[in-house]
Image (cartoon, rainbow, N blue to C red):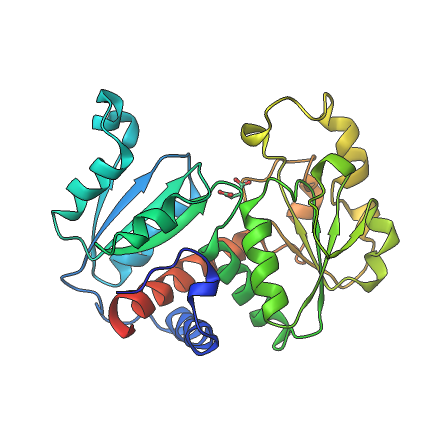
Length: 291
Ligand code: ASP
């Protein structure tokens, strides 16, 4: 039984296989490879893209998907997460797709060894399927991304997309630089810049991030229009540079990325969403069939 708590759970070979399978699924949808498999989704935090993307991916492969909405479950009657999880596992699913506010929840559940755990976002620690679909989108565009420079711009310290992305991109030989105001900057060994202008001429990819207001204990900035004047990715800032623009969504329009840039062909936000389905199909195949 294999889990995906973070991308470090995958070997280099498995990552390559996921890219290859996702590419071929994008060209031609496969037959129902996961017929008879049952997946349960358990999302303790809001989700638009990730939950529906997992569901579409699973159904495209012929699997059954059951959603448990924790806000209407016995969690509300005081049942612990661990008991809820063990009860769901008694129904013998092939995998549980979980999103939770705590960084270590997916690992703790995986350690029980009851079913495959697929981490759909945990605290500010990991969002491995997002990292893989972002990586796929970059490889699809550039071919080889080894040595390419990606600037991650925005609320890096609170972002699980950034944490998982950084670990995967560095492992795959990319140069990762961070651009953020002090309160949004994590403490790590990566190159750091306060202003995008300082590094933009060396950048191949920009990943813009939303301010994770729900994770801030107290408001960090009073005025996000002021923040946007420095960090919003707009045409003025990007010019004619040949840069790929990514964002995991939800995009805060004109704070993270301008309306105009969202329409620009360099912006791959919807392509990321499209690729997310194929990458999650490949991940499900990898975990539930190949492993
Ligand atoms: N959708 C991503 C996440 O769940 C990014 C975000 O919410 O800003 O972390």
